[in-house]
Image (cartoon, rainbow, N blue to C red; front, side, top):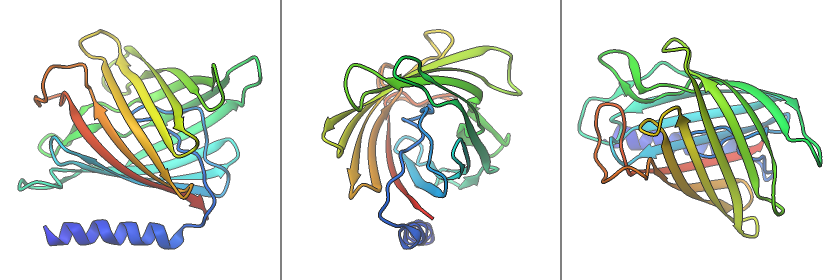
Length: 241
């Protein structure tokens, strides 16, 4: 267990050492993407801990161009548990903004997200499939800082079904506390997931998120494909290179 703690601390120390004081917006809400992009020359690094199965997902994204972000993530299943740790194959993320949006028209982006959830080391597959290819539109609504995104995605190599998602993020206290909400994996009611969260921003570059995932399901039971009422704790750091 001490070796795992050292890995986490080393990762965090590396991120803090490389970071500067400038802030770049996060590019996702909880499980679903946002229209927002990382600025060119900036990066976002995060660690995501799951309370249900002790999984850890680490992720790094980079602003390559003004309208292009690239990232890499990987999951360590059973990381915080007494079970054998399984390390997934690193997953790729990419997002290209087609249209930035205007006062009337929403922005448009297309992307790819290869990160699934609940990696099964025996089969070498994720029990919850990744987004795959997605399209997203988004814009500010109602008042300043309230962002709404709506999208559709196709999970590659699993089926040709089209899934949907909608998410929103809104400030609760200035630019320090944000409320997050999303309805994900929309194809049938039984498969859809409703997620809620709070984002705390410290010194404009460090994000700490507390998330309740799949919270419409009864109890906090885990089965082969999902964990209802799963609690997620996420730390993210965004800065200029």
